[in-house]
Amino acid sequence: MSSTSSKALTFELLKTDESSHARRGRITLPHGVVETPVFMPVGTQATVKSLTPADLTDDIGAQIILSNTYHLMLRPGVDNIETLGGLHKFMAWDHPILTDSGGFQVWSLGALRKIEEHGVCFQSHIDGSRWFLGPKESMEIQRKLGSDIVMAFDECTPYPATYEEAHSSMQLSMRWAAECREHLPVNSKQALFGIVQGGMYQDLRLESLKALSEIDFEGIAIGGLSVGEPKEEMLATLDALAPHLPAEKPRYVMGVGTPDDLIEGINRGIDMFDCVMPTRNARNGTIFTDFGKINIKNLKHQADSRPVMEDCDCYTCRNFSRAYLRHLYMAKEILSSRLNSLHNLHYYCDLMRRARTAIEEERWPQFRDQFLATYHGDAEI
Image (cartoon, rainbow, N blue to C red; front, side):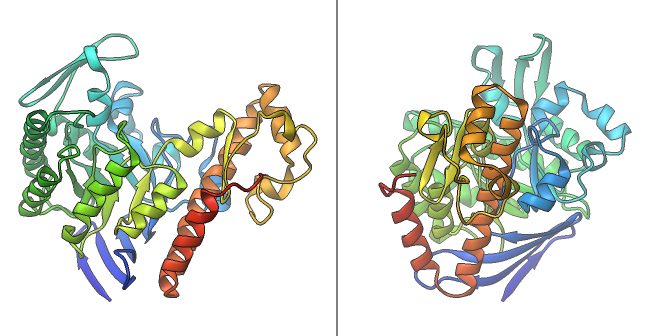
């Protein structure tokens, strides 16, 4: 066992897999302990859509959730949240929270934003009002929110990008990373993670990682993936970084992804994941299982008395049939989103629990291979 600690974060490395980079760890934060590998449900606007904090803890088993700087600064406003006691109290969630910096969101605004040396000028997607967000502003907003883990402000390199574009974007992100550390020094309340950028160019990724290591963040994230690139390129980027990621710090790949993406990421040494896919797909009638995805809209489920997964102990699978879930979706009932989301997030978090157990019991390769074969199989579901 090895560990590293800052005033706000302690990371213990409990077990490693000898045949891969997979590892089992534990992060201790001001609002609780997080067992890794972990999936973080996304609560962009201080809510995981359609679910309560009790749902997240009691049924889903979530340990940490993610909220977003950009959306909360626009609505309801960070000063309002700070006045009301901070993000934890505001949303009645007394477990760890990670806040994204807003960098990806303002980058995705396209024509509504202009990137400058010290940040981004942009127009709100809500009412067209003009704002500025840079490293200093992002750190101040996240300080007021009171999250346990703060993400550095960065520019997400687009895909595709030329080498020169990716290099320039990465260097800007590294300058911003240094500024973020300056504005949020090591403290007892919040840990700061740096973000590796560099597009799909492995030398730029390694250059970015080296720059972040010199700044000395409490954790390392990998950004700019799952932005339209083929899965093979995403995995090649993780392969290139895996041997060089610091063993003593938690590692987080941002915005990834499908269940098989998570397993592939764990195999390459990733500890933390987040993605809107479980809840967004749930609202669109898509449900995840070990055997792939179920489209609950399909007519074949109209009279199907089976649960989504026979061996799943989530609230949805314990109580409802596929036929009922299809009925709710086709009738546009609000309960459809709720029950589908309960299952999908329970499934994601339970998959991480099973992965942790497999690493602990020294059977990770077998678990990984069996899961990927089943998930990509042709079984009728």
